[in-house]
Length: 144
Image (cartoon, rainbow, N blue to C red; front, side):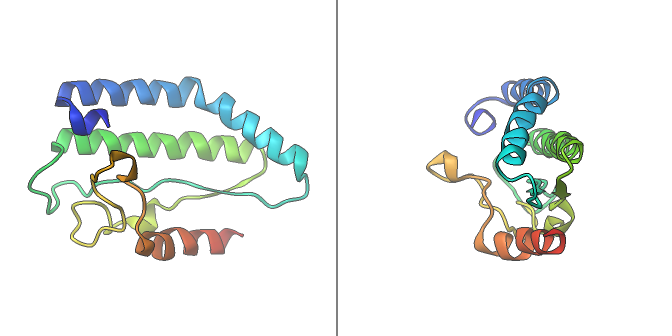
């Protein structure tokens, strides 16, 4: 939301705040959730799916976020996947990286499997039906 509604500098600062949260707070929160899952279903095979990179850089978009903002958001997705993957592994869970499946289907690719910025803003960046079936489902199925 910050990147869509405010300046590039405000966006980049907010992404850095989010990355600090991912490094310093998120691991503990994931541990709490993963411990609860293990406590309730100790024999379950748990598959944790990651996030795609949101933007194809230097792609077909002619308006919207700057390339710096797009790159920062992609970097945040990469960090989120790294932190989530580490915590999943520490709990014996399987991590499914969907970023490779979405390569070529990012926003600005011309064949996006992600909703671009839309109104209401909360619906932005979620996968389309094609993203669910072509990106998430095969990764999940191969690890389940």
